[in-house]
Image (cartoon, rainbow, N blue to C red):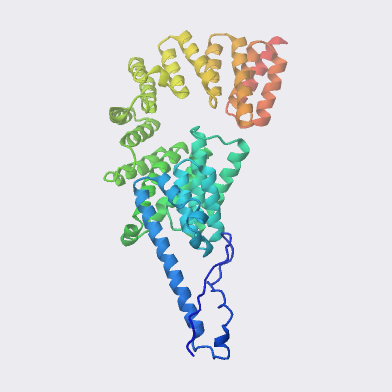
Length: 472
């Protein structure tokens, strides 16, 4: 008797991402129909089911390839919203792939698109799911870390808001997954570069960033030509690592080493132009300035200024003003200041503007500039205040000087939860001049306790002892 075909429906239990994956198993056949009772199972029935499973999995793999190919096209056109529309949420848009635990690459693409759209919380949630599904996947760890870093950079530039506890947690998240990515691919470039940027740009810890940039450069240098060709996408971050390494070396007081790295960076970037020319000329000028080579610094600054937009690249003209000021050419220093419209002069630019005005003998005008800068600056207010301290100390306005020093000290504590050595020094100095020696001695001892290695602590104690001797 001929058996009728029995329809079988193959389904997969819905699992959360990250659950242990098991081989796809079809459901059992429906109960054997009465007319088939007693009939022997056909030889190779297991292989029939296995073949059917393979056909289904092959279909799902091909469907995923098709979607990822479509995403690739959308990526090249920066159509991030379209990627989200196509795939998000994956469990609704691609339920068969999700049921088969094959959706993580799609979630990763959605996370990447959400990151570009500034929807960082959603992007991080999806990236976490990808990491949970494949804990040893380099790309998922690197992607999660980079999204966390991007959110921190967006907060730094005030595009999003992160409260202190959120910021701390986001930094820890980025470090944890950058560290894992570096462990999974110790010969890579990008993860070391990006973790270096996390230290340098977000945490301002250039000393910790420096060895990471060194590793990124060393790893690229160790690659054979064929391997470099395969990993050509990392070359951009190798060039950027050279640039950032030069910056860190300069900050570490190693200008000659910085100059060597920067010159190599410019050479390596001559064809690709990954970095803006204005940035490279500016960095070169800054390095020459630190070396005391003023003419090469000015030459590089002229090149940078020719390419710069004064409204966006004010740092070029600020450095130009400082170099001219160092050369005692106050006329050209003032010309450089005036290249930038007043409304576009950021606080650090105003400090240099005030320095130029002081050199020109326009002290009252410099004071007004610094007072305005101190009022508007949320993070560096203490620097404008300390300039005011020195001006009023020189003018003999010790009461006003004392006020500025205490304001700077208070601001620094509120902003950074630390004592401000320069403010303590000048507070004590003003108190000595005001003959308030008991209070001056107390402040001097606080400076000694909190900053025992301060270079001017000995001079302060000497001035205090001389004042006490004169008053007795």
